[in-house]
Amino acid sequence: MGAKVRGIREAKANLNRIIQDVRGRKVVRALQSAMILIGARAAYYTPIDTSTLINSQFREIDAGGVLITGRIGYSANYAAYVHEASGKLKGQPRAHFGVTSNRSEFGPQKPKEFGGGTGTGNYWDPHAEPQFLTRGANEEREAVDAVMRKELSL
Image (cartoon, rainbow, N blue to C red; front, side, top):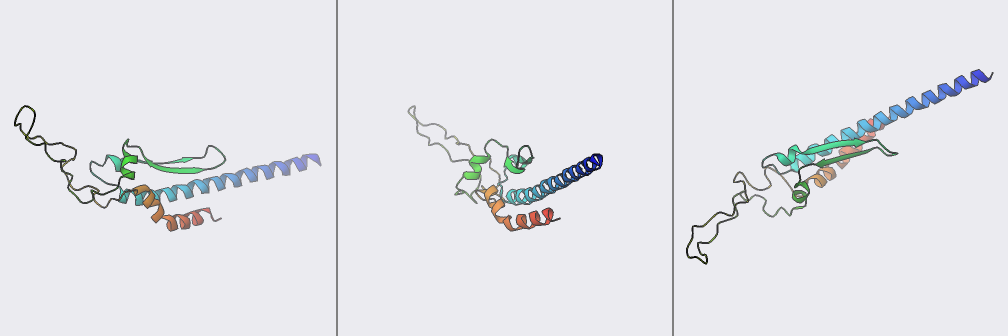
């Protein structure tokens, strides 16, 4: 009689392990779907000059601990600065920041450009906004809720 109970206990344990695995796969798939939605919307609002910033977007899922978490970010070293920028230059040409005067302590000199702009297009082109990642996540909130419900339903 003891062997039969042990068999049932092992079968229940295996079934529970399979159920947990299915649930885990569903959570990962739901997170992946949500991050694709958010990442695509954030990319729409990401400023594109040389495309370094937009091409540095990454998505990762961490299932290491008790929680399974998803993370979207930008690996370009200036991403946080651009994300937090005011956007006050939006629509202005990406020209150099002007020229020096011709005056110096040594008499007249040839004016020099300050540099700074790439000279192509406008700041915040084509339809970029400050807080592009936050805005992308906020605008996709309903779609993310819907996809999470769909993916996690049995």
